Length: 67
Image 1 (cartoon, rainbow, N blue to C red):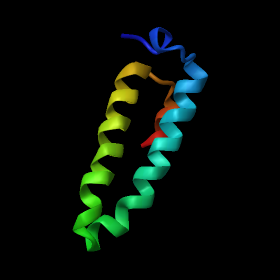
Image 2 (cartoon, rainbow, N blue to C red):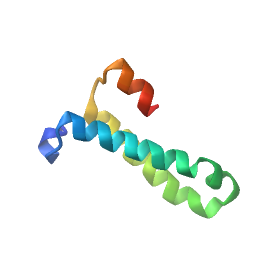
Image 3 (tube, rainbow, N blue to C red):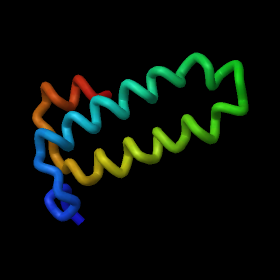
Image 4 (cartoon, rainbow, N blue to C red):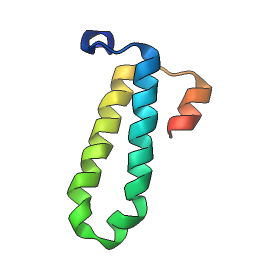
């Protein structure tokens, strides 16, 4: 399914990717010292991958921002 099928345009999808990427970064350090956060943090990892697949090819400048 495409982002369009879910009601997102490409710009909205890019914003979601950046927001989820930020949440993943938020969990980077805490998940190393608190194993109870791992399940929650991995949900963001999975969501990021799903959104990334929906986005398809991204311009290089956007790719650099989300990784």
